[in-house]
Image (cartoon, rainbow, N blue to C red; front, side, top):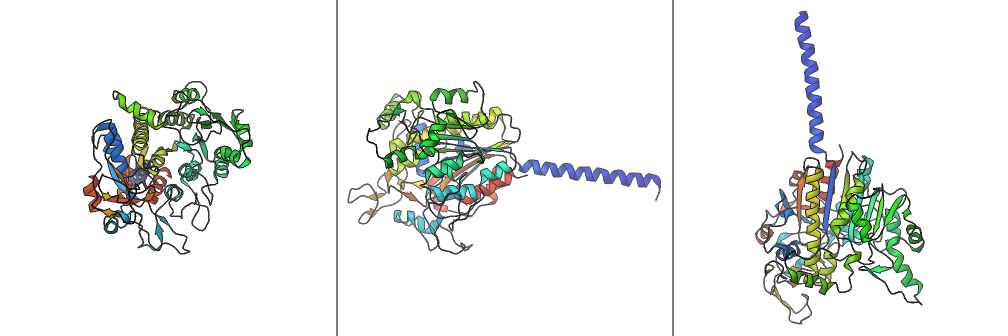
Amino acid sequence: MTKKLFIGILFLGIYLSFFVAVMSLQTVSAQTAKNVILLIGDGNGFNSDWAGTYYRYGEIGQQRYQTFPVAISCTTYSRTNKNVELPATVTGYDPSVFWETIANGTHSTEFTKTTDSAAASTAIHGGTKTSNGRIGMTYDKKPIELISEIAVKHGKKAGTVTTVPMSHATPAGFVAHETERGDLGTIFRQMVSKTSPLSVVMGCGHPFYERGKPIEIKENEDEKAKRKRFNCVGNEENWEIMKSGTLNGFNVIETKKQFEELAAGKGTIPDKIIGVARSLGAIPPVDGYLDGVEQTRELLNKNYKKADWNELPSLSTMSLAALNVLTKNNTNGFILMIEGGAIDHANHGRNIEASILEHTGFSKTVDTIIDWVEKNSSWKETLVIVTSDHETGQIWGAATYNDDNNNGVYDEGDSFNEFRQVQNQGRGKVPGVQYGSNGHTNALVPLYAKGIGADLFLKRIKGSDPKAAQFWKFSGQYVDNTDIFHVIKTVIVP
């Protein structure tokens, strides 16, 4: 071999090695997201989403998230406690069964049932089907590694924001491990412990305010009522420590002004924050009205008569405040879960007025997140997912069934007509709907995604529902809620 040939081969080898290394880095980069923002409209099925969109815009497809490149749907069923592995062929959603009659909205099988928020949140954040009531645990009470824990292991920060108590099922399933969702005090203490993966915990659960107004506490308040009032912040002892302004390294805020200043980036941004808005049960949709449509403010005041709007931050404000904390001195990125939690409450109460107001506050928050990505990040480094944990209320169009016993739900003795569309009454007006129940169903829920890794959902399609495609004007394709975990894990783990 000549010297020139040897040198040529050597340089070719070096070049090929360099090329392979560069391509390898590009492949990793193409699959890795710096930030993931997951927005969950609790109880927001397709018809609830349509109702809220008709109210806000008067036309479907006008929500910015409804134009995301990935617009599919998601199954939500949970599993029973039956002590067997779920057979691969088992599915808790069968389109041919679901669309037979409204009674099949809660269809169960030997292995599956209609989910609650705890099992759904655990599936979304842990990638494993579990039984109702479990938080970050398998059906047989074994802890599951959750996406917040995985993210922090890989150098990211994590946080939750919600309009309901901070330790309720959906935020709890992002971080905690508990066999019973009702143990709010224990869950909250896990969320804000010294070893918690969270840097942000925001929502309500304030023991001295409801909807911004002071709670009237009876002089002879019994111990049970007192424990319940402090449960969402751990216990009374926890609250006394929080009143000092810190707990386990978390700064603590509660006033609307504090939330707004943090959202605006004013003052010193803390490394960790607990934001307890001044409401025990839920934060009403502060921005649920529509600009230029005065009757929508009247609708807001009608449904939240006892709210003091001067004391309450919006979900958008809390989300921006959370982002400022999560991005402080952070080049590795973050994962943030934002919940519009009271859409579910409204639909449990069969209150379409409250539902569309809550939906508007939630959809405005999605807009806020989109604006943040486009101003402070990019779609090349951030993945945004908008979905729901389950459908609530069996919402359909008016006259889907005859309510022969006039009790407001579909039950024995009522006659099913046909599935009918939510009726559009125009922007700023309450759409025409009929509730079939005051509980959860197995209906498909929307799933929208944009940004780096969004196309991974299309590689995990579990099936297609032609009737849903026709009814809700999308492809009809669906993934399972556990796929959300697997897509997020794929894009945050290099």
